[in-house]
Length: 248
Image (cartoon, rainbow, N blue to C red; front, top):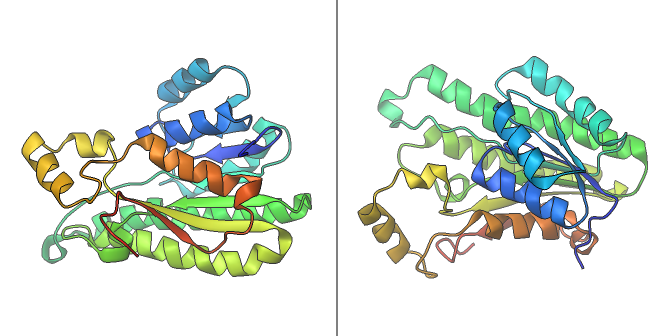
């Protein structure tokens, strides 16, 4: 089960903890993977770690011109066909509504939502043109996009928008064998949560039924399922991976 042999994938934000783990899991299960992000050295290090069937395609998602080229560059890198797109890269610029600057709003929406739209559009076009009857688009949302979070009006809006957008895309491309789904992580052990002190981590873990933070592997496992043949009848859904913190 969950064999991706012969499949090709693009993973954005592959220099972060979750993105790198998604790339590792896809590669382990046979996929050829294009890894993207801004930090070329980190991408090259991941490529060296994984070996063959990995291709580096750098991109700054804040730059629309670069985003517009990314799908074509990934298709070329992996051999002419792209089966799976994982929009994982994300940006936070937290602030309270009353003092949030316009640029904090604009920057987060541009990276988290607009670039995801552009890559979904280009990726689904390619998948339909390839006429393989198979395509997987997986967008990494957040529990914040479902329930909101103080100080994250911009981030929550971008992730809520992603969820609605993904549902619309799923309805448009489902007849072509292409699925579009979201994964909404809760608190995951990454550099983003490493800034919390032990007291803060303990207080958060106490309100999670699982009594702990998740790991990048938990998210990657969900991606693997949605990317596989076995996940082909799931579309327009949001898979909540949060230890029970939010039961939807």
